[in-house]
Length: 294
Image 1 (cartoon, helix red, strand yellow):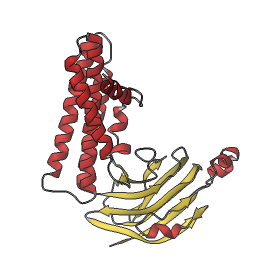
Image 2 (image 1 turned 45 degrees about the vertical axis):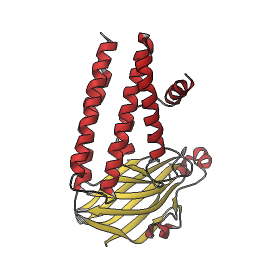
Image 3 (image 1 turned 120 degrees about the vertical axis):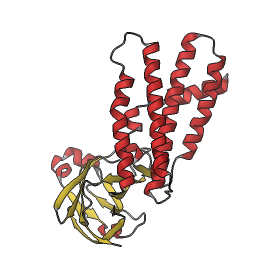
Image 4 (image 1 turned 30 degrees about the horizontal axis):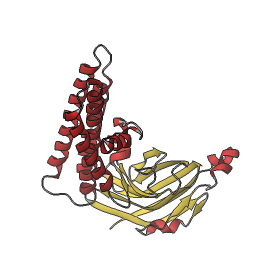
């Protein structure tokens, strides 16, 4: 069956589903500026329908087991997408009275899928210890519940990044200043989801609900990092950029003042130069963004 083979090839030739990636902040709170990937999910639903039909027609046990495992993984991918879709609506204002209940229903579905998949592991892999599926979901489920609670609480910052070359390795550090002092918000190499997304907005949780005075973004490493806009939402209030102070190699820092796709570039764009001369990679380029309540 050519359609079935195409569906299996589509799934098996991509990177194997890593639930720790699909159910992480890096995926769930990372939004492509061009919108949610509904076409990808529609294709996934088609694959699930084809695989489900094939399971019913497959008589040989090894083939049936392989198809069942693929089906489980596709269901978990869809559950992660639907959770992300609801989180997106909550963050960007499309919440309703039952939004939090809907989020918890997504969590219950993921918990049920994890339970079913771990039971399948024990059934198909008797004697193989530990049950890595059980271990993975026992670790991930509390993290997912925490993400849902913190999105519902609403204290976070948004940073709209631009990264045309997804293979760069610019190390970014974000900190926030309040009356209580300066605190680290996040640090790492922040890329789009999917990787080829050039414009993407990341959500970062805040540990305090104190009113922000400024936000600082520092970049070093290999390749340039683009920042288009940054804002904070704390206690139901919106804080927007008012003034920018730049240090190091920064192009067009004032572009961050506008909520659009104009890009401020931080760091050395020539990654090969940064690789050859480590002092270039270690140079810190930064913007300090004064925030004011809207």
